[in-house]
Length: 304
Image (tube, rainbow, N blue to C red; front, side, top):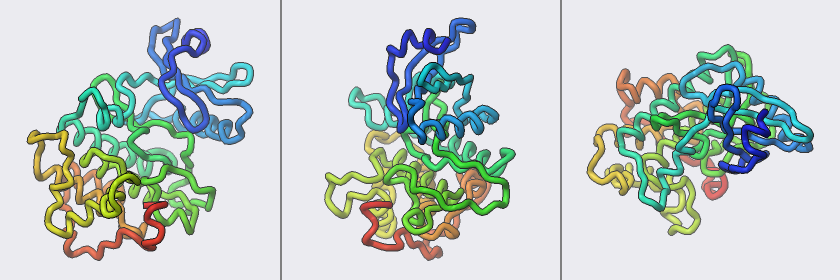
């Protein structure tokens, strides 16, 4: 059915780490789907396939992209997700045609992803560590609501368990610095990645841009420097123009810094972040925080 739904895998939507994604329409219901096609010969792809079925198949949250079904066909493993018509948020942050998101839309998306991560960390039956939180995995539905997708690298733990070491996974610019020494995935590492997402969406540029001057190459270091100089609003995206709420932009940028501290125990948890974003709690004064955003300056081009 999925082969027919995609018309023989003709309309490609994008490429993932372990396979391509195609658009399809289920014949019985007429529902549009995005079908991930994973090679059966890939051990990592098989592992990803099992993880997504075991996690997404049972999750029900408005911010998590829903899994409609799955099957095996010949040498392929197929996952059918609900279709996200606007693709990832990257399509709007870097669209050459001029499409953009208003500050109101960006702030709503960031708040939504925070609530989704809170659900994964504390509210589902197990702790889910996504391990690849980044802008290209924030997908937009027909109403431009942010949805979290691509759970293939996720790990599930019992509440209160100590995650075991594993291989380094994730995306440069979003990986927490402790990965280089501990190789442990954790909810605090997700918080670090979310901090990188906050800065990227507010500023409108990628976490690492090697073509820039040294002092501007790493977005986190740039925003941190602007904050220390009392000019944090200079880190606001130019495409926003004058249509934004100063207090919200400043909040998002400061939270991005707070989430990006080098020591995992110094970062806020997702419940605190949702409270800050919903204005249910006051953000601590960053001036009173002993902020350390980089353990080893020699590693910043690799893991910040």
